[in-house]
Image 1 (tube, rainbow, N blue to C red):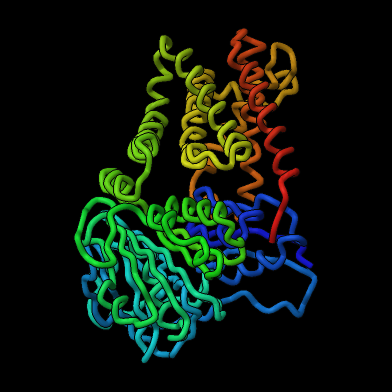
Image 2 (cartoon, rainbow, N blue to C red):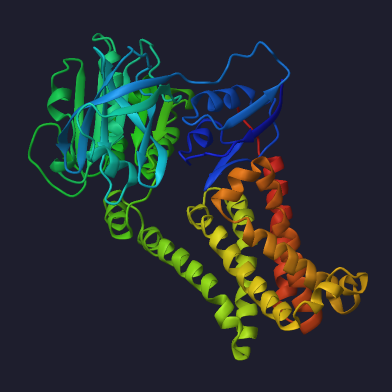
Length: 508
């Protein structure tokens, strides 16, 4: 029986654990354990730990017979690369040992650049005769893309293969494969492993013909029929239609979809839309197998904007994806400038107001995401929490530094006296807000997270003390209504989110 689940330092935010066991894991910058219902979700927890490419999920239990969750490291040597479509390359690596994998699974490639070691996960296109092949979208300014494109022949890397639960199940039912972009790579591995007497149909989507991969290979399979869907181009060719894969899926015979095993891979929005269509058609959930393709490191904002257009994001989502990284940078710049701005008396009250509003927004984002789990906006805003916290705490820390510096060493004599921390005139709340703000600011970095390990997450709970102390102080001492409204809002949303999370059913 599982007694504890924790995340060790080194998470690469691949989101594999969240996909495998969403009731327990949530990835926001790093992976978090968000539920203690280990007994109900035990099988999925073990699967997530086994498939973690960097092995940072620690599972403690009282069953000594449980199999280990570690994965074998395989040594590989770069052989060659070739272009397959616009912005897409195939990479071949020679492996010293003949590994095994189930079609649909991925591998974790351990790479290195000037900034250090890191890992990237890619679906396995094929692995035979000592050659493992990947089909990879090259992202402008992508860290993994840059390293892979610069590989010289026979350069050595380490990889872990056979990861993930998106796997072909060997049944006698027909197969319906649906993919966009490089999501076709694991689908091709599945098609090659599907017996020739089982009929297969492929819906494959791209913006134009330049985005279509493996068209000739697909036509070569006698049992495979293919519909290529072009969203931004019209072609008069057999098997090619204008529109998205979701449009073609809606026009398919329900008899086919309800009788087939269905595998979906590619753009997350496409995957979610396809699942919704299939559920509406009455397809049993156990026959729908899917995998989202999400970039581990975003491209620059303009490239990401173009990518969003191609995959059908709404105008609001596109604008948010474009503006969010710039707003995060702006918050960090403002945080660095707070000591200078705090020296200007006319700006002090304004800075304190901004600090309060920033921490209120920080505190309500996660409850809002939990209250409205289907809303696309709140998960995208979650990464802002770090920069909002740094900015808010920077204002408090800068003001405290200026104040105590003006007192010289005399403040050391009074700081630890009981009278300094009295409840009179809300002094306790003021100084508690200062202290927790400085602690949170000093530990808001990767080094602290690695050094503190599981205790780092516990330390972040001081954000509640920081918020309520500061909000109470500005309301009780200066009559700022925003402090009172913020406390009521955060408390209400947090309790509601907690209650809803407890009431929602959990599935392994």
